Image (cartoon, rainbow, N blue to C red; front, side):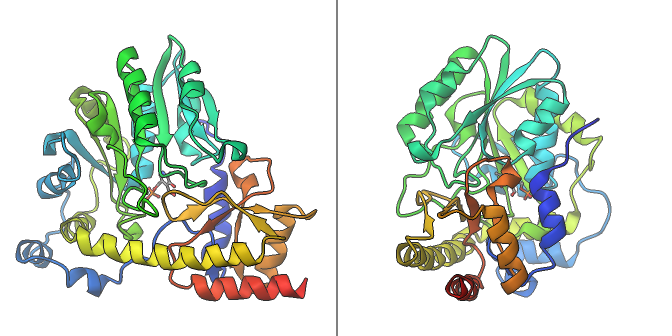
Length: 371
Ligand SMILES: Cc1ncc(COP(=O)(O)O)c(C=O)c1O
């Protein structure tokens, strides 16, 4: 398979472990192992203690699939397939659903694999552009108008990376109905689910919307356990899930057994896990609100409605790539220029899931004051 570089991941490969302040990370501060284990109930603690490091069930540990199914109203454990992160799920799903002659519509700017894997598989992809002038909102009627007879898949990431876009329940239902009427699959990339901000209404999960709705989740973002590399697909379309399982035989075969048990612990304790994530995100967002208000001459943004990232604009004449390069050099603070998404504006991704955000913002302000 020939596929272009994943620009954002190459950018992180260069910088992620070389800088002090990752002010553009999309995940929430990872749990320390000991704290996570302390959340285990007796059964999960026993599973961890007695764990044997053999191969695991290819579809995922039955208890983990049952726990994941609890996140949905209309999905059973056999309608869940576990993957090595959301990334493997994207790869398997889009490569089984899309091929030459097929068409997909995918939100953009966005996580590159959501459209690149389909293209590499030979399909044509229409990018549904989110526009700052529309407050990054999903233009559902424009998106539906892009659907063609050969469209097989619509992909919407919400809460959205990088803009924080979250459709209204009415927009979401309208899109679900349009896909259902046409017999098209809808992949809802819900990796930032549960981080709806300011009481924004959570959306009905994709898998609960209609038969061909697919929810994609992961432990990395809202559950703050990126190191586990555990993600999943949930859908009532069992035939599709079976096709994905057959593709997974060519990628990882099964997940890492320790990760499955640790994910089970995290999901069973999800009230506490998510409360911690929401607290970190809310505290940090207040700091960014204040920063952007005080520095209105340098930054503007459409405030995110969900997730742990936003997409502000750098004001003035300096291109964001040059600004970000000077900043990281001088202060060790990393921003992600919009160019890494192929976006032409002067925007950058800022992440507010990390506990050192207050210190990172202080360094950013020192940099701004120095001029
Ligand atoms: C929208 C979106 N989908 C999927 C993923 C992949 O998640 P993971 O790296 O945990 O596999 C990411 C990661 O940044 C993401 O932002």
